[in-house]
Length: 390
Ligand code: CTP
Ligand code: MG
Image (cartoon, rainbow, N blue to C red):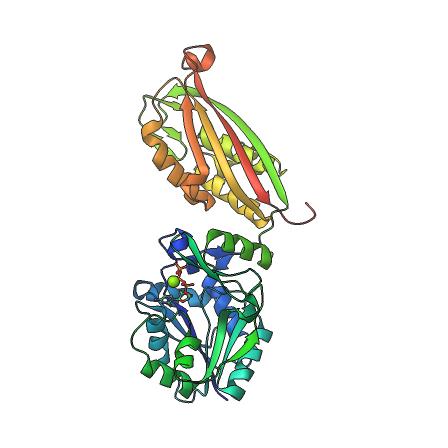
């Protein structure tokens, strides 16, 4: 028996509200689709996998396959079509000629178990066609507009999942016969031939990721996203303003006749940010990590040091929930530089700029900040995760 698996992954994923498609979203550290492929590839019964993706994503997925440990079975990556059945048909067209059983499994079902896959393959080999399905537990109403038309007999209703498996010639025949109409699964096309389809009991965890909630549930099930700890940290820094120095704030050169004095680039915003991050993680402060008397840090790019702090924390299992910064400065106006600052800090920390807040205030002419003797910065950071036992 030569088993091929077609993975349709060319859908719009529009209900996830993300333009890049739901299968690229992160699930415990890697894209959803790589989980699906890994689960299929691990099975000794599977001989080849044909991946069907959106035409514009072909190159991207091809290169991401390199992240699949021991990748050997994904033989072809092909462009999908308008309807799901068009995508499956494109996969069917490139199967190995030896294929005797073909499994179709949605890219959007990353949590399929090996047992379910094997039971489906065996049932297809024996009966010609098999579909994983779950008995419906909710009562199902047929609805038109906003009105119930009738109540269906729940005891006879099953919700179809994938994997669905077929003798390869059976699925080929079904696709050759199917032209019109939209079939949301493959078994439906096979049923139209009059071929009997065997039901294999599916699994509740074999979720199809359709909405954000499904993704959240899947993240809990893979258990990789540690949500155990939430830690807040604060940071404060101040530097004197002097002439003859460039003003660097949040890693961005700001036009100003004065600059901040210090051993490094004296980036007061970044220094406050680093202390907030280190403090949240229970680490020692920047002074001990990057001693000012150490010549390696003379004139250092503070954003580069921030990147090192970020790497230190992620190595300890921390993920940055958000970082909020306030600059205390009488002049100049920071607002025009804020987008560039967010982008630079986000890149250093490996987060999107949306996670970082950057704002400034004067002190209304009061005190040393008000007199323009220096600038100060306040930061708070929220970390989540952490390794067990910290
Ligand atoms: N699929 C496909 N080609 C299509 C439509 C869907 O390959 N033209 C794939 C999807 O990527 C998914 C599986 O078929 O892995 C099931 O489709 P569905 O759950 O409907 O996913 P999407 O169409 O991506 O998302 P949605 O309909 O929820 O917006
Ligand atoms: Mg769809």
